[in-house]
Amino acid sequence: MKKHYLSLLLLFGLLTPTFALTDICGISVAPDSQVAAFKNGDDVTVYIEYSTDEAAGVRIFARPFSNGSLSPGYAASGSPLYTGSGTAVSSFTFPSGSVLVDEIRIEVVKSDNSSVLRRTWVPVHFSFGSVGVNHFSYSDDPEISSFLLGENFTTSFQYDIGYPGGVRIFVRPYTNGGLTPGYSASGSGVYSGTGNVNANFTINSGKNVHVDELRVRITNDNQTVTVDEFFIPVNLYFSTVKITGIVPQVGNFPYSNESRTMTFDYSTTEAAGVRIFPRPWTNGGLTPNYSASGSGVYTGSGSTSSNFTITAGNQRVDHVRFRATNSDQSEVLLEMLFPVEYTFGNFLVENIILCPDSPARLENGSMVNVHYDYYNDEGMDTRIFVRPFTNGSLSPGYGASGSGLYATGAGTNEDNFTIFTPNNVVVDQLRFQVTNADQSQTLAEYFVPVHYVFGTVTVPTFNPEEGVQEVVVFPNPAADEAFVSFSLTEEQDVKLCVTDLSGKLVRNAGIRHIQADAKEQWTVPVQTLQAGTYMVMLEGESFRSVKKLVVSK
Image 1 (cartoon, rainbow, N blue to C red):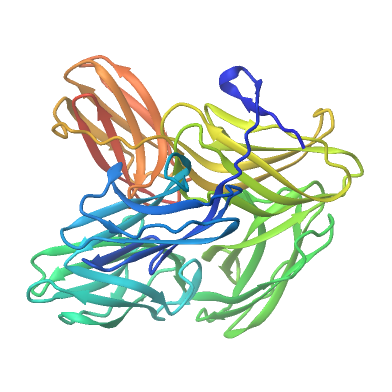
Image 2: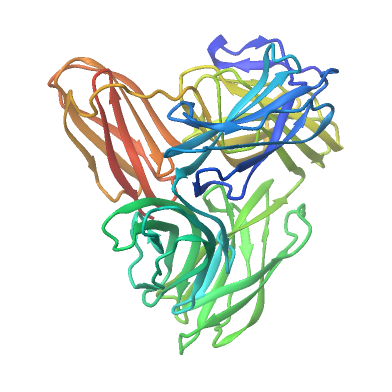
């Protein structure tokens, strides 16, 4: 089916479509997917799902990047010829030296290495040196788990230590950029050579305590030197009530007014008991037009169920919010979001495959291909438009495929999008918009979270804070928006962006031309960011300033 690109840069002019015949989709990294420390000589292995119609095959390489360039001193595997479709394997290491890898570049090239067919970067935080701490595993699901106060969460890992005198390794819970109040944790022996460790912690006081990161700190034997430190994202809740064993009802495409039931286990230390309300959640808020069952008072431990439905419209439920209160509902004891995928109504979009997968960085103009299945029960022909969103609005400078007509029934489709300009645009959502044939009526809008950065990382080569004065980030912590104020000693262009602690770009506030000695203030929206610690980076032609920002919810 013929499609056309729609580009804001060309005032909605039509471009010629060029769907990728060589592509990469799922990318996985082992032994740890995002954050770890490795001893010199340890391999990081990358598995890349690929497809190609190149008769002679392609070669696929994974290479470490640091600060926007190939990491110095790396050693890496070569590539055989890959044909058809399958999984390519590539690895790298550092024989010596201390290096921090912040991205892995994936390149697909022609069999004779004459041209690059596909290129993307995957964000990571891998340090290489004399200390390896990796192969992390957990006693409970780190993506969402609930505990009673006093219950332990255990982190297991392997170590390989070549640091003189050995090291100590501490795993600590973090909340909103600081140590979680009320925690207690296991200590550390002095480790050298190789081995395995179990480290645990708990939270002893508080209600609805959310642990959003694990801080892994590696010190010398007497704790006077921090050898390495990194943060692992988690989603753990501690309170006087816990909710576990959540089982969503099967069937992801119910009709309007057709219920879906959530079955779950609970346990509480509240003597008067608790009430528990599962509610449908869509794109950061309660799903419109929902109806749900109430709650009895639950004491001790047990199992129960609750149901909800959507009474009108096409709605995609992406989470169920579990809120537990005391018996008279005067206090929230626990609130957590459990991921689900229900679409109520007459139009289903499912089995979404992104090529390359999110998160990733791409060059401006490089396409993200979006494959998905649909089911049209609207009783009319429809169109589907997939569009990139940034901070709740259409991404600046995007180009995207148009839509054919989709008749009633099931089908499979491919769309794509890119960002042509400006540099370093962050796409944080994809919107699937369904309309009638003449686009006079919007039938459905479904949002899917992603993380794509389009652009080139730049590294300053100047003294960090010469040329800027009085850089202040406030309020700090911030919940909805933060402000950055500063003044310059000389006129220049200035850009502002926000990254997480691994260096991944999460907000790009753009570029302004600033006069000397003028007080400047920028607004940074943070309401869609997860609670945690971020770095605000202000960069000009003669300076670079980095400040910490804590986002609270």
